[in-house]
Image (cartoon, rainbow, N blue to C red):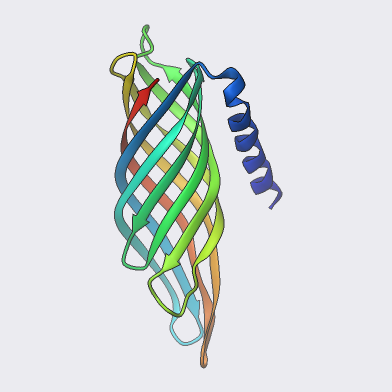
Length: 188
């Protein structure tokens, strides 16, 4: 729990300092593909792992602090055969210029936030949980106002429930989420 608290505190502190340092604000969106890993372990049915794949949709806004640092918040939505998820994330990325004009950048960063998971089954309840992870990808600055990126994000999930259905007892969990996305941002 200490690591999660430190990660969340670092991301929040960076985001809170953005207004005093920000050079360029931006808004944007992304669409992509999301894979969730669900696990069940019950007395009657044993252990089972299920990977669900579906689309993810994201809206975000933030600030470029300088040529190498950006902070942003993201709202994401995903619905698969097992659950619907809404994520509220704060992220920090370090950008590494790959050309002399810094039009093409590789980014790597950290993310922390909350995820609201609503399982489709009446046996499981909706729950807000802490999520944390990181992302990497490539960003291309089309012009002074418009940029696009392709990225990969990994999120560790803390969604765990105890199963108690008659004689069947066990656990149900959402362990992790992986996303591949394509985004477009507008700077103002």
